[in-house]
Length: 203
Ligand code: RP5
Image (cartoon, rainbow, N blue to C red; front, side):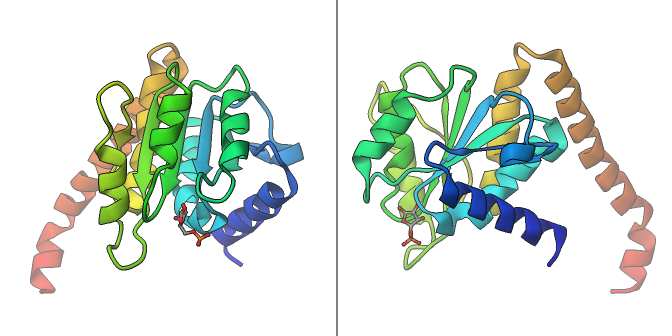
């Protein structure tokens, strides 16, 4: 198993065992994790977990932000969603919510939590390949916004970056890490340009 697969496996196991979500931080998962969660990463099903690990891993590895991971299905157990979302730890400042298909989870959470920003990640799934989830999330009525990211992997990573930017408003350490992340992206372009002559010759 690769490191990424091992992490996914550990989070899946822990999520299945705990009713109120699993803490994930740089130090580890569940009992090994440290710190207070600042972000809730939630999703409609554990089938969304491989996608949402892109968000979880970006939060922990790039920005050192502890998060709570929790499954909340508005179509299978709406009452428990209301209970969980209304009783989040006080430390949660941003919610990332992923779903596929008729993706009502982020919009429902936006109504339940008028005090917290909600970032939606549409999952690429089924006949409509995520366009259904994208439109379900983005077409919210006035008054309950969901900040919707791209469908799939880029959306999951961008959700974590967007959450970090919101937290950085009051946290200079996260702000510095965002700047370091942007610097790494610039260096990638510089490396591509440095190797461009060879790349062109090989085409
Ligand atoms: C949505 O239905 C979930 O968020 C998931 O994206 C999709 C399919 O769920 P499973 O049938 O795989 O549990 O509510």
